[in-house]
Length: 271
Length: 274
Image (cartoon, rainbow over all chains, first blue to last red):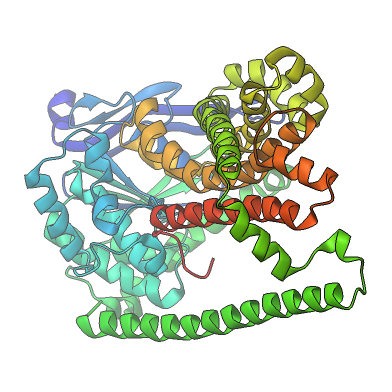
């Protein structure tokens, strides 16, 4: 019965613990404790939480760079054990190879996975068009603005055709205006591709604007404190951000995070 | 993101380029004038015997000597010997230096093995080894090849090492999420990252290698530009000696500007105002 239910989920984590060893003190630190969450196919999930709540650790574990110390993560009913072609990450830092053109960068993930074909090249060009960079295929990253570089970053992830896209605060380094604009763009692209997305941010309004559901993490150890269903109808445009219901969601999430932060006030100073 | 913005940025870049060209042209003419002025001053100083012409010769005399010398068989023989010594030593330094530098930057165990020797020998004045080298390899070209190799090797090996140690960890992390193997990371991130550093090391190596040829031949030899230069100097043929110096200088300029062309080809991806 329980298994039959799990089958419906794209991504589930079960009793997930992640610990790491602090380089300075040598002490074992529990970054994530008992994370149990289930994400449906095509869902847009945002994770927010106070700094140090293990958001990025969680993402790094899902992408396979870190190993769980307890529990497991299932993607399409397969246990995750290391990086794989079914996941692709969009980084906070664009992480583009500066000596490669936009097109070559977009194909980089596919190239590493040894899946380069004429078909893939065509797809890469289509994704470049989708992220709004048509005409820039042969430009080098330094010729692009920060927002445009993040578009390349996104196109690179889409081109490997992953079953899950992980986004690690991709807009945090952008200026406020570009960030707002990119949020709208991301929703448009997500709508076109219908990829299950896991988006980490420290901006609560960003999370509410993008997500179907927001997972609020608490800190030390990182764990899920609340799951907020954002039932604002789609398609959403930037005007939504001024609606009362939107602000209510933001306020609500703020209050949870505030509580969490005050609980660990002393812990914060230790770091 | 529209066509209009693309065209706008492109035309902006064109204006920037034109401005830069104008600036470059201006500084080029200033440089030419500066050199001409220097030659004029030199010539005047020599003609009026402000400084003894025996020490400094004069640009016109040097030019005349050069015209005579390029017609001598011995001059070209000497060029051939020095050229052979430099090229052999330098190619060896590149062929051995780059792999060792790259490997030691990539693999910490290998680094632990070779690094004591590299850092130790790097600060040793290689010229101090010349007497030993000449005893071991004789006064022929072999000893010069060894000293050129030794002097050009270190800038190259150190630059390769340094390049590997400054790899962008963000790029490596990105590659790992796409299941990249160590070899793929090495090939697609590490190697391309080293190119600018390597070219810089090679540039330093050219200077060191040219010094090595001259010093080696000066110390003990039977032929070569350095040999000719020394014997001219000892016979107070200052004009002929200066021709030798000039040959080395011009060689250095040609080699480094050739390197500049390669550098531009390999770094078309870099921001221009760097």
